[in-house]
Length: 204
Image (cartoon, rainbow, N blue to C red; front, side, top):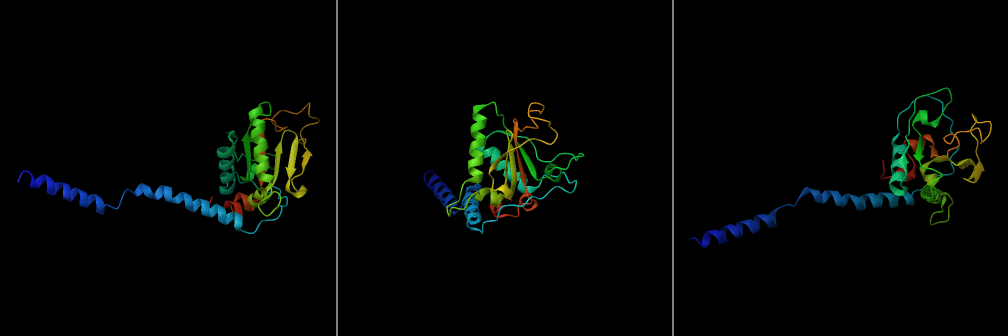
């Protein structure tokens, strides 16, 4: 009897382990291929045209889900800091007051940050596999980007152009922040901010 009982117990344990459905944690890794498939589906969706300028018209400082997705992607992929999305409404209209602009904290005085910004711009404005220029920026609904006295606007096909804030008489009389030398500003269309364009498939 002393030998049979341990053998029986071992057999029952082996049967229980064989029939066990396994830990629910298996559902976690299984989600990753689905996300990759969604991203691939986004790339296969029809490519949006260059975004038209949509001026801010109301005070609604709430972080939009598309803007948050773009901000997370930027910081996770390129580093830098989270400078914020929404701001309280002031006298001057801003996409920040509609939750559709993201400030990415980087410093032009740091070589590593300059490389980060260059990598972001390359990622936004690179052609896709079919040769369509600025494909990712168009799928995101990027209206314009500002960094280091320069702006890249969708209505100019993202060609770089000199930038000077309206509040600055000249560069020398302008702060580093208004010159966008301590952050990158990214403004989105309303559809992009709401996550309703192709890049946001599987991300919002």
